[in-house]
Image: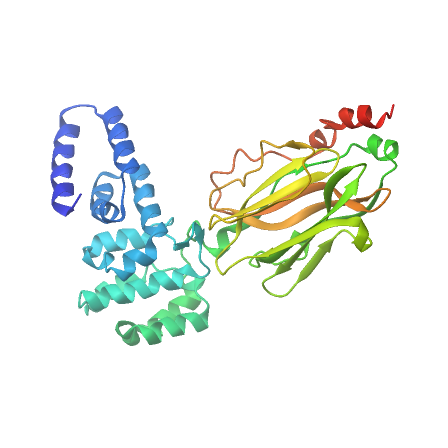
Length: 381
């Protein structure tokens, strides 16, 4: 779908809307176009969605460009846009720069650099045009040292350095959905939460509680994650967990027993821009096994035994979310410690799309699914 086709489509679309009520047809057409959208059609559709205020299709166009931002910029596709269409795109609050589905750090700097490329490719030298486009960049989201670096690299921005730095300090626009200021932590689902009455019945003692989110900055990410496995009443279960974060913090949950009481220990290290985007759990009395899946499609695990039951609620609350930290408690049993309650803190962006997150609380702590089976097998009344 090139620009000519889109222009013809827009003409026919306007004629149809003038003649009759075509709202159901509009929705159907949008769904069809969205399901077949590509990088080139996304660029061509900017003028169309702007003209007819098609919010749903606009979101799809911006998301496609954000997903493929590097390819779009390297091929100069945005440089083909008229001034107003380019401005429409840059002003969209959902515009971002994704790497493997996750927003890159300080992506507003990438957007500013793209503006520099656009000015150069189109020989834009009219001050009012440049200031008009600069006025929609969220300059306050860009660290000052990074801002100065972008200006230095983009010749077309040199003459506007003083203006840019002034706006960086004084002008604040509404944040984009995936910007640092919109990043927040949410906790999602609880696993293997043992009711109090079972602690005494199984002669278990809670030895520690942990919540990494209270210790780790929201912008920090796990770099290395490790798990060790122990045995409890014939079952292989997760004995403990540890995380190395990018800034150097090292957190350990659980106490390693003697070497002969550790069934196995595994760890994995994430690549640059790689995050854990999904975690699968099998659990019963304890966490029986755990599997980590990353935004790059790599899978680590399952680590642990083959007991317990799979939870159906093992996904993060948003496809853009990623794992940040653990929350839970460590319980001591006969031979070692084990993780007996586990919850995950996820990074989320923006305020929408998270209404289906399950609340945490006593409703989970009263769950005894699978514990009656332990009673029967262990002959505990």
